[in-house]
Image (cartoon, rainbow, N blue to C red):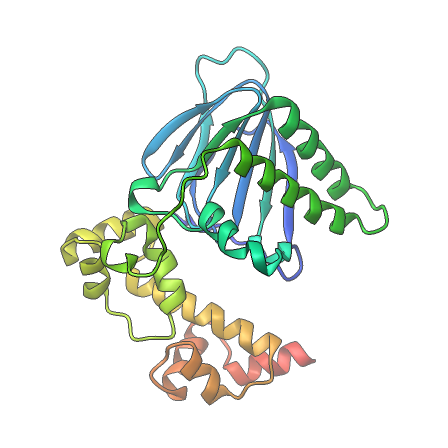
Length: 280
């Protein structure tokens, strides 16, 4: 089962809508996701922990967290909630606040690897409704308004929840939760990566790690590493004029021959053909 959810943030920086869907299967993605319950209630599962969201509750899923939305069998009211998906990197956060925002809304520790849940019906409702209305409008600079309102929402969430100081992520690689391993792979994909070393970082045996990875992410760890490298290579092919040898080196392939072979197996065309196709 494919659990990775993809959004092309170059063409669609946000995905924002109201929904009554209570059957969102277990999935993960690189962007942040906010749910705000307008009416009714739903169950959420996040990294094997469960909670119920009631009317007025707001839930923030971190990037790379496994999560799902399920029916609350005790709910007798119609369910309606807002979904706001965004890449925090697109918010243009001022430099002086970047570290604080990273600690609050990107970085997790193995002990804290659960979504953020808060309740403030009036404050959250007002900002969320503004975000959805602006996103659906065609008013001048409406996407700038969306960006500003998402920042307002994150500020309100930060003020509403406990802001205890999080440990720096430096040095945390030696005490890594299994659910942080995608983040690690993404940031180290240009380097040599061996599955047994990743298992060791998670304090697991190779066989247990490999089994758990396939069960959670729908493909082997080795396949996933190759998938990430190829997607990064595709991005460089499409959005830069870097030569093939450099792209192969920057994305973690042994050499350009290895890169070209893997790329053709994946896309059915060579990197050079890919670039010509995009240009034409």
